[in-house]
Image (tube, rainbow, N blue to C red; front, side, top):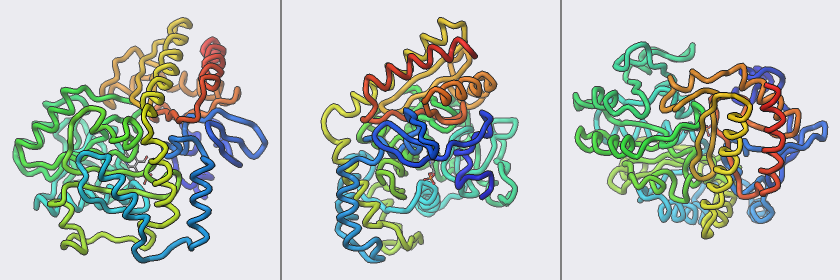
Length: 409
Ligand SMILES: Cc1ncc(COP(=O)(O)O)c(C=O)c1O
């Protein structure tokens, strides 16, 4: 396997060392094949929000499995999860399930172009929307630069309709939208793929207003934030409603699921209701639907996101205080069950700000934490994930270990 992994982010390229090979996971913990135990703040990159391998989720998945693993025909479980998503997410009146966040974003992109009859899109530097050609774009030197492919193998023809704006900078957005030829403005409503970066309320509302003004669809890619920063996602957390939403991770409860949704008017374009083609042999898979339904049932109980946010705050505030005590520049934040910090003075409002962080120091921090039993994402450009299974004891232990590591780095 290239690099020994099935997805690049699992490798330890940016922090040094070798990836840890996991044997099993439960609650807030992971164990490697050598039997070492870790407090896990990656949570399989987001899905494990109620804790790994939850007993009830496993029980229901086993029951479903006894009926078969795939139907390739409609199943009632799809309706149940669809209803839960529609009830929870303000912008969604109809939903299409896929097998991954990447697939959801590919479908969303085609839908936005079909609905607006426009080809160009605007994304933000440092935001990730899966690995489809059109999204693998770097910003170039000027804000208005047309996208250049970010990976060999991506044809320039696929990225020439992708423009890159600067996060938390409305003027960079308006300069691209003002000609009235942009199909969609696509963003992570809280960034988790350049490290953790929170939008200002004005920025998100400004994106909404500019899209309405110029006839551009506003898309929140909530693959990471959906059901994580609040039950209804970032759109509930900030009270700003996009036109189209993509989801993944949490809604599959650890099984492969993605989804995109919007108003009935927009979604009615999707085949077979309408002419925009998108399909999937395993989409709406009964096992994945079951894991998603059971996960959302737990998350929906009152107070869950308040608890997640309180724990994220306790951890981040603690880490920042320890950094300060030990003379390290650091800045960070949190939203619901998502958090992060950078080794730099800050504030970090966009990708360029994030590149100012001390990556070598982050590498030493990561290694020190890992050696003492705390599993953090192996890159300064990734967010952290809190789960309902993380106890006060887990967080206190993490902070005790952090106190030791901050002294050494
Ligand atoms: C915001 C966002 N969009 C899309 C994706 C792609 O999802 P997947 O890895 O399930 O294809 C990710 C994955 O991390 C993501 O964070």
